[in-house]
Image 1 (cartoon, rainbow, N blue to C red):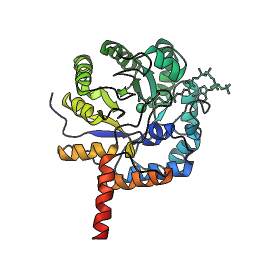
Image 2 (cartoon, protein in one colour):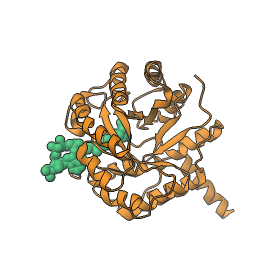
Image 3 (spheres, rainbow, N blue to C red):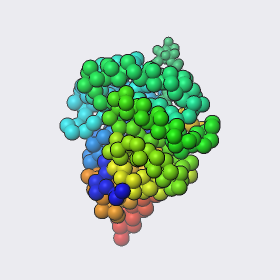
Image 4 (tube, rainbow, N blue to C red):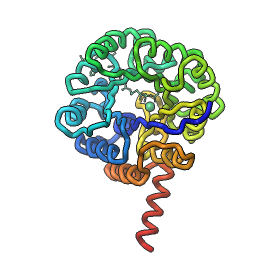
Length: 310
Ligand code: HMG
Ligand code: MG
């Protein structure tokens, strides 16, 4: 399969990125970040998660964030703001705040499923069923995630066949696409190729997305491997923010800037401005009091500084 000519990015920094931050980030800061990401040309910005505030305190302001975007005029025309919803309760709160796009999240590993959402894989799929019905009635699109597709922090290796089973089930239940999460970033170009070989033999590439955490520095290589299978949707995180609080040791997602730099170099369109992304990364890392993780951002910021001094 040849590489796509155009790729669409799902920016997950405000959710996957900020859910893992130890220091609190205010609602206004989150909204200002989301605004800058829209300025950069991103059209899918995962805004927050309607999960239990006891489990993930950083997402406790989910209602205020989504309401501001969907009901109080802070959102942009033409930008989608999907949110995570683990069950019907989360979906109903999201819908009340104006959600038009949500995502359910399952796992390919039993032990991770228990740690992350307190139930087995089969129970999680049962919980999604009434949510899927309610979403269909409300005309809300549902994306599906499968975590631990290239390794589990508790079980180690995960068989591609197990990923396929969960992904197929989510699609049968009505998800419009499934995002495959390398939650702990242990995948390599080799294991990514084996996974996509199987999945793409059973599921059209247009219904799959890649979600690569960069814990072992392999995320760009894994993304490029998926691209060669015709995958044209990737989840990325501004500055390289991110991790999952229930996946010990996992660091951020592949950085949006690094991916845009890679795709620009391949002549693959994203509609996203690298320069504006560097500004957005500077903004959120400024608020966090750290330097962005993204290598391209650090290089571009250093170049800007040199040019300003010249
Ligand atoms: P539970 O304790 O089994 O749920 O948690 P429960 O139904 O027994 O309810 C217990 C309490 O939670 C009750 O409150 C409920 O009202 C409340 P209490 O009576 O004790 O005050 N509750 C909720 N509150 C707010 N929103 C809700 C909700 N549901 C119940 N939707 C639950 C089950 C799923 C809620 C919990 O385990 C949870 O919130 N987990 C969150 C896990 C999470 O957010 N993980 C990170 C995101 S996934 C990820 O990062 C991976 C991904 O990026 C892909 C990848 O990288 O692989 C997507
Ligand atoms: Mg993730």
